Image 1 (cartoon, rainbow, N blue to C red):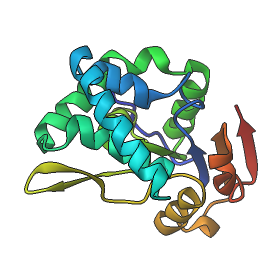
Image 2: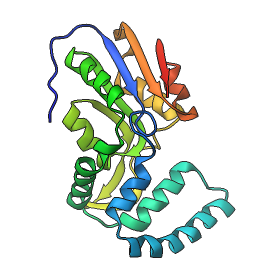
Image 3: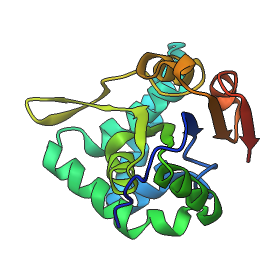
Image 4: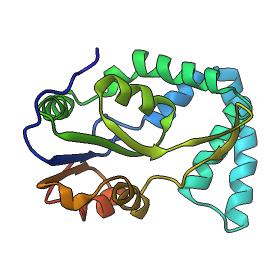
Amino acid sequence: MNHERGPISGHHLHLCDFDGTLTRGDSFVRFLLFAVPLPRLIAGGFVLALKFSGLIFSGKWSNEAGKAAVLSVFFRGKSVAEMKTLGEEFCQKKIPALLCTELLNDLRRAFQNGETVVIVSASPDVWLRPFCATEGFDLLCTELEFESGQFTGNFSTPNCNGAEKARRIRKKFDLDAFEKITAYGNSKGDEAMFSLADEVFRF
C-alpha cells in the first residue's frame, strides 16, 4: 500500500534507524537466508572464512569490509534486475513480519501530516529502497556498486553508520530549515545521528 502525504503541518524531520529500531532484529542475515539456497550458503561459508581471515590478519577488517565480503561471495555478478527482484520479494514476503508496527504507524502518521521521514541505515539499498518507496519515506543507506549492469561486490557509498550517518544527513538536508528534529535508534552507530536531533528515542 502506498501512503500519500497530507497537508504540510510543520517543518519536522524524523530520522529513523532500521535494524533493531524499526525492525525486531537484523534484516541483513534474514535477507541472506531468504535469497541464498542453503547448499550455497554452506559452500560460501568456507570462502567467507578465508576472506574474513585475510581481512583480520591484514588489519583491514571493519564492519563495512565484512559486509561487502558477504555480499560479494553470494551476489557478485548479479544484474541490477536480479538484485532488484530479490530485494522487492524480500521486502514483500519477509519485512512485514519484522517491523515494529507501533513505531511504523507513528512514522506513517508523521508522513501523512506532511512531515519528513527518513530511514537512515547501514543496511544495503536492495530491500530498503522498495520499502521506502512503498511508504513514501526518504532513504539514506549503504548502496551497492554496479558496473555494466552487474554487481561488483563492492559498495558505491561508505557504510552508512556512525559518523557517516550524520554526514549523509547534513549533505541531503538543511537542518536549520526544520523546526524540530527527532531521531530513533538503538546502538552506538546512531549516536552521531542523535547529536543532530532535538528529541531522541532509544530502542
